[in-house]
View 1 (tube, one colour):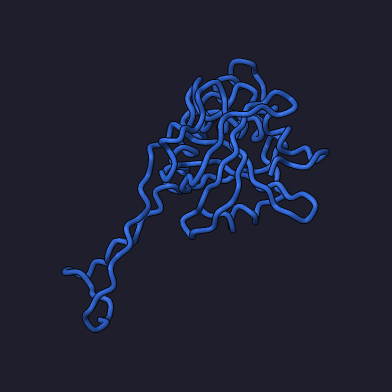
View 2 (cartoon, rainbow, N blue to C red):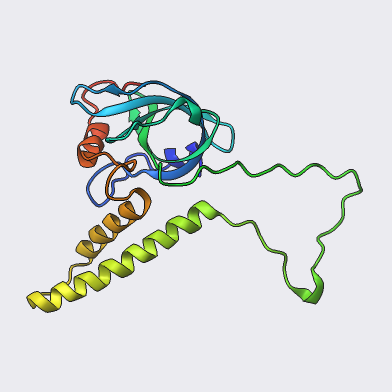
Length: 210
């Protein structure tokens, strides 16, 4: 995931009507102290670089915790980032997934000094393992777990209340499970006023901080 892919979802809304955010691993190049928006929401100004080397200023909303610290600078961290177009410019804001382990950037393979060779097939005719997109794999696993748990819960409630299940209700509950998997009940990257922060990010009445 990178900033170019994040820009592609500009204007897309999630099930709660907020700007869609994508999970991206990026290197934290700089971070400022926690500040407060006009509505009292806590945030930090950061500069984040994606794995392609593109750097962008990103407003990161924080919850009860201490937020991003200086000792995390130059570390590769996980963020949920959404685009915020305003007056022909693109701004970025989102959340730090502080429950996700710090990840090291993939090591660059040194160029071979030998002559190029064609692809080698392992013994037994099996194909070589392709690189695994661990970020996407972890997110898919979390969504699968959330959907399975939400479906079981909604089926049980429907049987108890003698009502029919609504697919949108199942998706909303599944989204809550995914939030819990990534961020826990408290102290995670999602602030208590998560919806309020999302709403504030979607309001373009005033120019964004960046």
